[in-house]
View 1: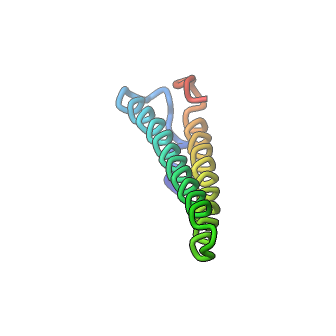
View 2 (view 1 turned 60 degrees about the vertical axis):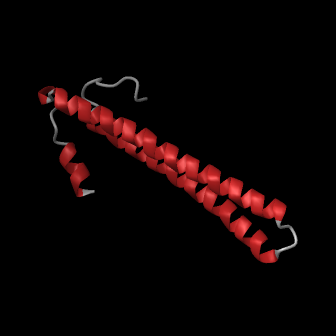
View 3 (view 1 turned 45 degrees about the vertical axis):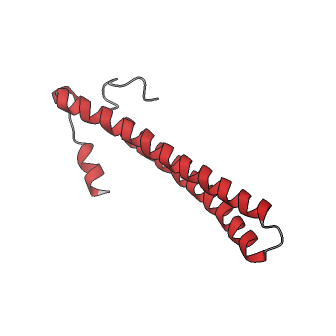
Length: 104
């Protein structure tokens, strides 16, 4: 959290093009990270459902399928939480000027 506190001192009026481009890269990286969490959650959900449906008689594989379903919920929740936390931090850093209206 220490590095985050440093950015609160940034004066938006003194930013140069490189800083704006870095902000854009961070926004895109946040979206990319969220999508990777969603993709992992979807894959885990599909694997869990497949194990449950295909191996209905095998208790071990059905149990693994339910664990995969639980993991998919965890991955989804982590991705959503991470995305909105980072988005909030980015808004706080650049709230003095309306730099990126698309990031709302």
